[in-house]
Picture 1 (cartoon, rainbow, N blue to C red):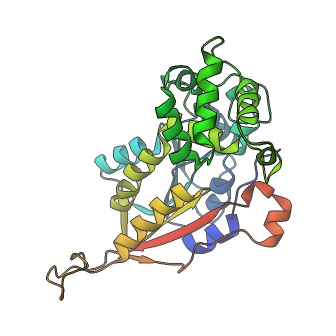
Picture 2 (cartoon, rainbow, N blue to C red; picture 1 turned 90 degrees about the vertical axis):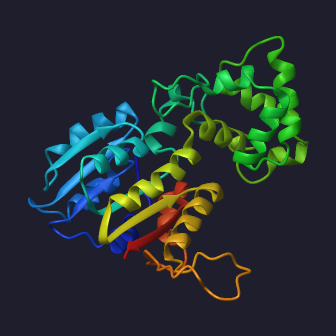
Length: 308
């Protein structure tokens, strides 16, 4: 499947980029959002693209000459990229993140992100990361795997699956995605194999999040992004599962909250002021038309915050 950026029109509407804006794309991926944003920038604007995946840099180099604005690419985790920009005294008018795994990663079989292909159990967005999904499956205890599948995958059969993983690896270590899919299908009750979606999706999500330290990276990146943003600037985040969305929602709510006193205080004594304004009161989700064109957008949620 070709790369299809999610919620592009809605993102552009919330960002409201001007020709002289200074924009940071934290998760360049295949460049779909960046190309749309760059169309609203002029020669006096700037687009900074960031991504930890070396393939994303190849996409950027292919796209660079067609952009209407100056641009540059920062290879690395967006947390590090934002900190680097902040240390350098840079300020942005707009920052956005498109979280989760991209279509270019899912549809490259040898990356091991998809349960639909037989491939090495890798799942690293940055190939230089030290730990693969296979490493986790072959080394972690049953208790740790159970907790991982439950916390990051919200998998109801996490204990059964972990027990089956440990039993299988005692004779043959995990190397391929198909081996894990077979284990999952064999561990869960028969009716659960035929429910909505592939029964392996939650375990694959949990492993991918752990391998790439996705949630901790997001927790570190949000304050860095907000600090990098100039007054009146906008940051937007597209998330794809409840764990990500909850982190973003709580961070934005905290910035939009004036009083930071404990809830049991009878009156406010902190004298606090809100430092941000939530632009859309509810998360923006894909239209029916977008869902028809791009079924992978079904879980996407877009939130935006303006810095006061």
